[in-house]
Length: 204
Image (cartoon, rainbow, N blue to C red; front, side, top):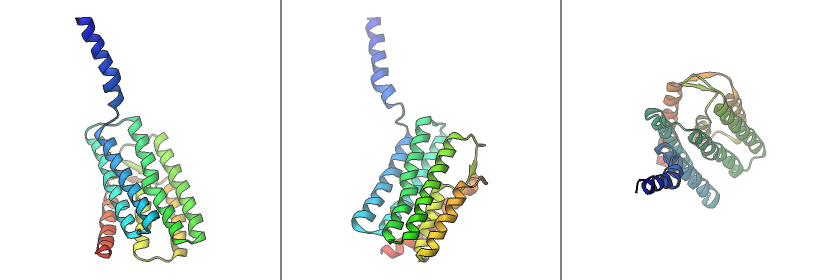
């Protein structure tokens, strides 16, 4: 009887526990980031509803911030979670600015958006392989760069200046400059609030 119990327990470990061990709360929250990002992409590509897409992409950063907070607060770090977060960041914060440039149909803007995506992907890869001091952010975060682009759009910055802004943000993402994590979080909150306040009245 004991042998059967051990075998059943071992089978349970292999089939259930091992399979779902990475299904943590932070990873599920990251899934919400992805869902809102893809929904925004769908709105832009199929309905050309830029304001609606911007609102969904702004909400993405709420979930992106939340998954990091939960992982730190409850010590739910995992290599898979870190990689998953970076992959979703590409879709949530780098692809949307590129699609915006395509939507606006300006050649120089499209080229600068390609540079922006490359810089952002490089920064995310660097973040995953370099060991930095806890609570320190190196280079401008992709999410902050995306929010700054959304803000520029909402205040009607002309395409030529917007293209140059993409390039400036690209260099800032690649910068070795360090920022305290708490200041980055405060800036994120400020930009989310500001963009939401600019978007919502226009949707009404």
